[in-house]
Length: 470
Image (cartoon, rainbow, N blue to C red):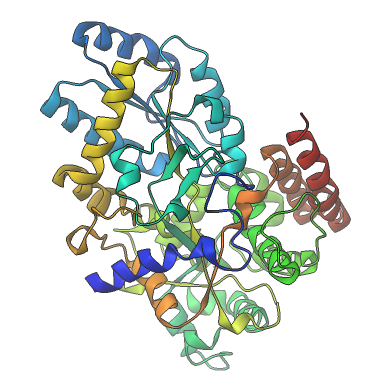
């Protein structure tokens, strides 16, 4: 099993070099721009400056302020920071931005006298706003220990402006036991989960589960596709990746200033399925949260749940046993999709603030080196955060036991073609918000699908132009 996890990291490192790799490698192409995965606060941002400032004055030897992007790991980072401070005496403050507020929070914090020394961007588009703040990491331990430059944001000048620290995968998480129970029902559309290898088959099964939900003891085939800010990123960003990916594949490109929307009918089909065969009524979508969806799956109330490897901490230790967690591709009805795999990549790049004092820069680089080389740091990544990393320092003994990571590896072993994270080329957060609002209005019956198409296609061109104006 350990060897298989290593294989996953190596396979993931190939994503950016595939056809239509969607700019996941170097810092010269388009990428995602805002913190769409953020869900909760770890520390009150407004209270941060005073507390860290006092520590730094007292220590006089540099300190670290990490503005964390991933709320689900916020408490783990705080605990790890405390361990480092206990060992070294160097103050480390961790703050996690609120749901969907990372970019806004970062802008606010960078204007303060005690600005973050360590922050995140989601790829080259996100980097564009912050490249003038990025310290060159070419001599750092985190860059020297990368498995591949595919996971570094490298400027034309050769400066290493950001380094990815986690490789993640998403798709349709499913409850193996519930799906097996469905297969045992009279008239079931499949005999085994492996028969679901296309949108047509997924829809046939989901429709039947929805019709037989009382018999199966669930509230719906899919968990609630909530459009609250803690959940809408799953659909305006991650689900929207699929039509973008297939368009890029068809056109042989990695980014574009004008998306055509070739596969938006397919996007409509999967969104219709999510909002029809689900646990709640469409009128409830605007207030349904990511926590609602995770809880529904964790308690065995739905069979399918669109999310990724990071969701394990939200669903473990409930009604769904680890051995019953599986993950299959998100099918949207494209020719040849029986060979499609899961979506694998990274949108989490560490950047060090070059405008910080040299003391704080050195302290931050030392902290990052400790994180990826120490037993404490690597154990926290493995056991608490469940990260698959692109660093050579994480050998066989430091791979996570996350069953969703194992499911991702099984998908690779099956020979399926990994879907690249093309959502990193979306032109702006405003574009995503426009698409998300249109999706919600369409699902609620207060808007038309044509508006989704308009926001997707016309909005892309408008936002791309605005983002690239000199």
